[in-house]
Image 1 (cartoon, rainbow, N blue to C red):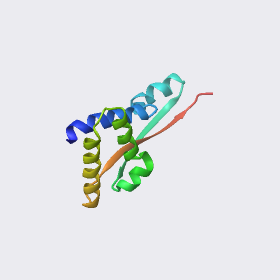
Image 2: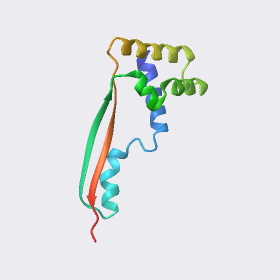
Image 3: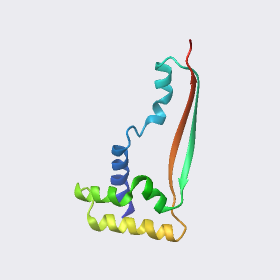
Image 4: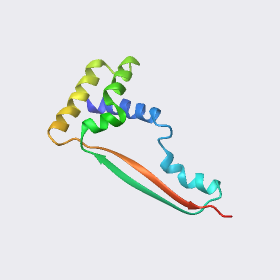
Length: 108
């Protein structure tokens, strides 16, 4: 079931990403570095194509890793990937991420 697989998947993505909470920390980091006039822009990016997402993060590999780690059964992983494929084929697939851009001034 989606409600069982998704938390395991999200936790794995958080472990893979170097800092999944960087967006919350950018302002403090730049202030600590002595920057001023800090501007942070968050830009959502939505993917509507499962193949493109797999080029970016390789879902089958992630789910295979989760099965290897015994955090998911092969059956649950296969069902979830099949659900994503069906959603993609029906035009219902969407995956989103947020990109952050920071501009600041360093006093001389």
